[in-house]
Image 1 (tube, rainbow, N blue to C red):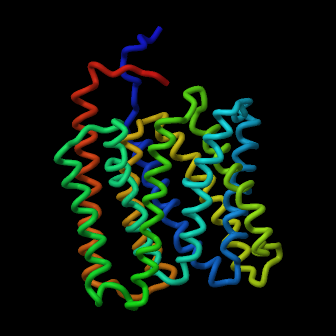
Image 2 (image 1 turned 90 degrees about the vertical axis):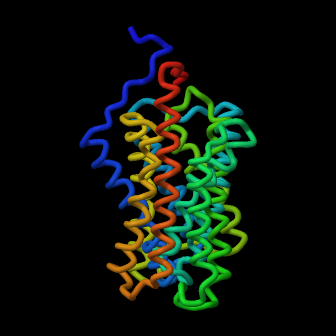
Length: 316
């Protein structure tokens, strides 16, 4: 019988590393798929409805097969709907709107600021302690963003700066979602149940908004490529939530945060594969600073976890 004061056993080995790489590559694929969908006539709001509600229904089937349905108490529903707004409905809408106007590699780089911003937002609510190494990581990440915004040569077109500023809201929303879930998620819900509830809630929220805007996407749409992009995005979202749940169970949340490195590099790879074109030296330098910031922040978390391990209490 396990002692409640013992640290949970983690299996960080070849399988967990392989799954982490797959998860990062799959998630980074979402950004070019967003662009393909919008460029082929898929309306932004209708796209988000399919990705969230469709993904939630697929995960619900998995929950039924596991005989572990999402809880439906008042606290659970509140977490699902608030989480659905800030963690999926709002950021996915912004990502979809910006997809035709920015290279997917740039969008990817900005979105992975979320782990660094999560640390910053966690300080006031005492979820994190002040650490110089994490602050250095945050400053490196912000420096990378400045390299994208300030030099005129960094973006393909100067008019993209406004879209970059809009997309900066996405990692802010993701970071707020991380803090909200950490503070308020009911402990009896596992990752799959929580993910299912959040996806379904986001879809339910988007349905009336999309209906009022008259922005539904009905199959078949104006383009087969657009229809397939909707399907791919839905499956990507399902795979993302499922893999993250599996990896957290195997190797822990600190290990999962390192998927951000794969997401950055994957963003560059998918951009080159789908859309071609050259990348400014400023963008490469910004990517290096973002990776440095993420590495520094992750190292800081891992050092803190090792130092606290003898006192760890497993509350899961």
